[in-house]
Image (cartoon, rainbow, N blue to C red):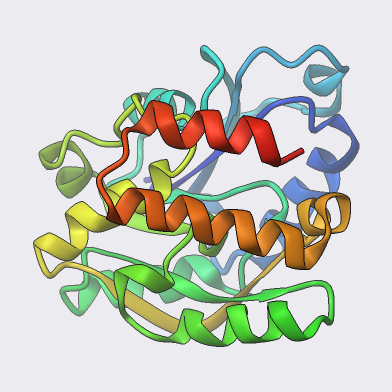
Length: 230
């Protein structure tokens, strides 16, 4: 019986998907109770040839967009717990057991703390704040676990958000006072920082957060992101 469904939205990630799946399998505490759903948003590389589907590993096809892809994965998930994960964010060892233990204590949604795979003063400060249980410290790279019942109750991810969908769903959970931050760490790639420059990207992310606080629309935030972030 599947307890946890890991839902991974991807687009042109053929170069890293094999190693990532191997990592998840090797670091799960009970692989028989975990299923991995790769939700492809129309990749044009050879992603599908890198994945060997089986009973606990499936590819789901969806329109492109993380919110849309993750909702599509949730609809197909067999598990009572959903774990949304980016394919460049590596969860801690025995992550499935840690999640189940948290849920058994009544924590129906939450995430792990986060560290980057790059040492930089700005990123060190940013990752330090992920230990605090406050909406301003949340981000999709920290991953998200949530009971399927609660996910359906809050209507899943808002597909109007092409970016910022992770913060939007987290805000709904915080409104319900239903969010916990586990002390173990997800290790996430700083590849986007390397491309854009750490200071530059952190500045633009701060502007996007500010726009959200000031009530700007999802479309406005997306336009800004497309203009300034590579």
